[in-house]
Image (tube, rainbow, N blue to C red):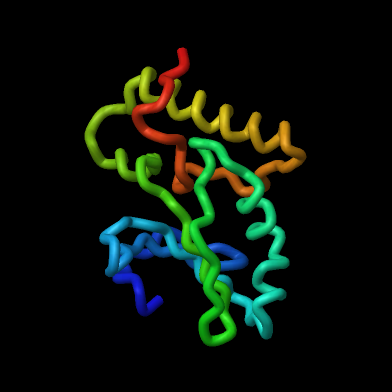
Length: 141
């Protein structure tokens, strides 16, 4: 994590903790997922189901795996999140979310899921705090 400045924790799950971070060399904002279990070799990191899946999937509504780093026997997955919106970022702004915004998010989530399913994958952990599509893409309707 030496190359990154942690901005905030985004989530903590069964397999890892995810932080929003800034690359100190490029100033790019990324998500860094630190896996909880130990990895004793590079091959073990690269054989993770999540790593293999993300390396094969290329869609604007699915986070992109930028790189995998093994540091102190932990795997760090660096994920591209630029342009992806998170539902909680709109919490506390008063009234209910506009139907058009919800429709847009749902369309983008379903586009990503359709792509995954077409390629033989399925998502087992959808929840609002996860990215909900690429802002500015097709708005569906």
